[in-house]
Length: 154
Image 1 (cartoon, rainbow, N blue to C red):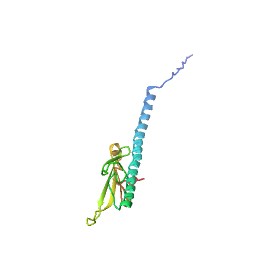
Image 2: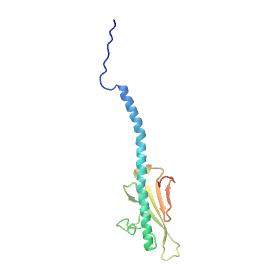
Image 3: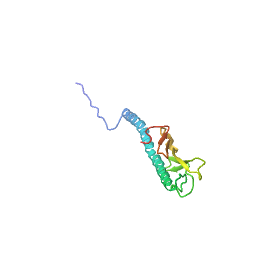
Image 4: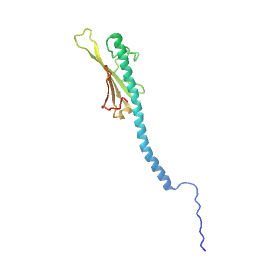
């Protein structure tokens, strides 16, 4: 007569089970973290689009009253100091905006600013958002982005 002993399993995990769990978790994390960071960068684009469109609206409002465009923060109501809007940080600091004005024909007296271009450039950690480094809008409302990604304004 043979006697069989049943081996009782005690609670806990084996080393192999633990290692498999760690490998699966590592794979999931390696996929999830970059996707999450890409979504965060994409959501920050809203900050740049809002700043550019806000400044364009302010330019048009200023033009309707003064028949001229401006790049002065004070004149556009974009600050309390009368300085040119150049590389001014907006929002949480992920973008910097610049307003450039083009003068009309030199024969016009006094010279009028015939056009404007507002640019928001990525800065800091937002520089990793390769498809949408720059947002640009001009006086005709044309919206472009560099390096010409089609979904940047969406």
